[in-house]
Image (tube, rainbow, N blue to C red; front, top):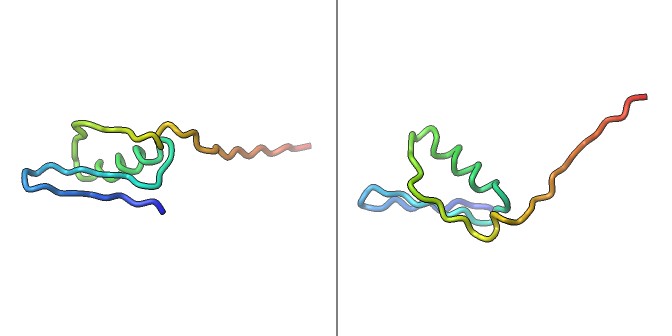
Length: 64
């Protein structure tokens, strides 16, 4: 199951933990979440799952 755990601290900082994602999917989703909030990423810790290659689906159409 994919989920984002978002923690808002009293000092105004926010941390986001992406669970169940592979590859850059977690970075893409958290960036989309932060953009409308006009939030700036001060640091990013990538887990081992980030480095897992995701299966890319490709479709080709042959016309004859």
